[in-house]
Amino acid sequence: MVCYAVFFATFLYAIGFVADLFVPKTIDTGGIIPARAALIIDVLLLLIFAIQHSVMARRPFKQWLTHWVAPPIERSTYVLCSSLALILLFWFWRPIPTMIWHIDNPLLANAVMALSLVGWVIVLVSSFLINHFELFGLHQVANNLAGKAMPEPKFRTPLFYKFVRHPIYFGFIVAFWATPTMTIGHLLFAAGTTAYILVGILFEERDLASIFGDEYRQYQRRVSMLIPWQSQRNQKPTKKIPAGL
Ligand SMILES: C[S@@+](CC[C@H](N)C(=O)[O-])C[C@H]1O[C@@H](n2cnc3c(N)ncnc32)[C@H](O)[C@@H]1O
Image (cartoon, rainbow, N blue to C red; front, side):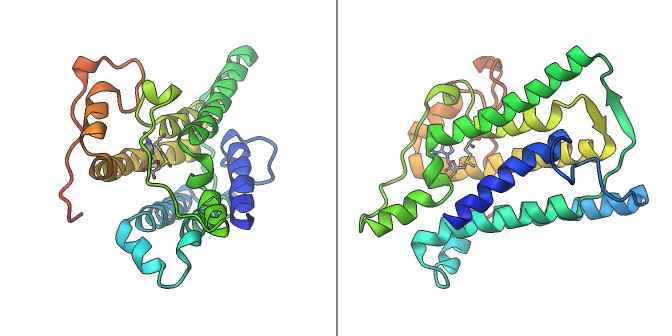
């Protein structure tokens, strides 16, 4: 529950950080340093998060980790480490305030800001659609306390999952790009996280296809990866990654 509380506080802070609202340190605030130095620091912070998030999600790492932490809290440990990597990023992120676009019209600016909030809502709602409490480690601990084994993973395609295979990632992309003021720093964050999401999808889909087999492969053929209105005929099959990677 402590790990979950840390995650939830980090999630709420992330909304303010990206929207440049409400919180003391945002994507566009903090001490200004030369752009090249800021770029290096920010890329390193994104890399730390990406490496932590990807390496700890792989099965061999999980098996290794459960020699040190009890299996029911493996997911909570992952959630805690991800939150800590994000807190590090929020803390040390250096702004690069050169503006790329700025929407002056208050009505339009508010509409774009609202779109970004819709993105965050899609993220949260979608996590509940597949299994919020399992995704963030509480289900595993509750089941362990009740002396029950975890059920087999279930393939789910409710609501948003009927339109895109990755609504959580779609929500993040909307939340990160829909901004009335786009600075170089914000662009770096949005582009870096989007690239990471696209690579992450390749690995996640390989795992999903190995767990759910043909059911998942048919879903890939039927439903768009990220763009809801993409026609089925234009869909390319997801690139296969050799099992050793
Ligand atoms: C952070 S969530 C992201 C889910 C999805 N990629 C999205 O963007 O909505 C990652 C976890 O969701 C699980 N997952 C992804 N799609 C799923 C589905 N349709 N049904 C059940 N679990 C799914 C993956 O196995 C992984 O453990």
